[in-house]
Length: 150
Image (cartoon, rainbow, N blue to C red; front, side, top):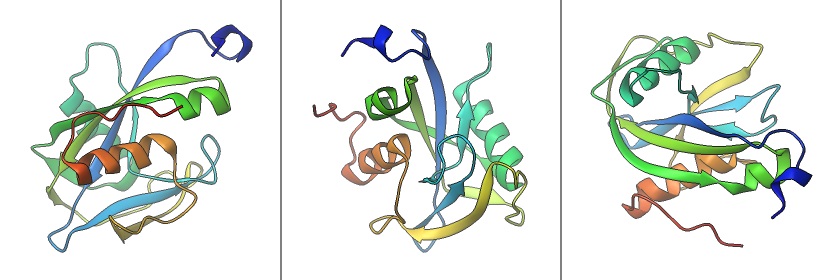
């Protein structure tokens, strides 16, 4: 792959994705608007300089859903080459799992997301964002990383 031909960036960026799982096994996904539209995705965003993965996860989930997650744990890393190929942006995503949360689910960023839904982790709504799909696959497969298939 010729990255310079992609045009947008030659910098690899770090994203955070958070799998929030309820007691019934359902996970939270949102339907995105704007960037990465019209894909469904787990909550997440960009890691800020000097920020821990855990603090970023807590911040992003709160900003997007108003839920307060506790004790998020790093469970996987994904190399999102599909997004790199399609959008010219290369992201590495650190995936965290949160099973403890409080608050009432709200749509906090209506310009970025149409809705948040609880869904069966084995039957994801489509179309689904590459990083989110890979994150959930790692979780379900109990693996830290899955090699990208060309």
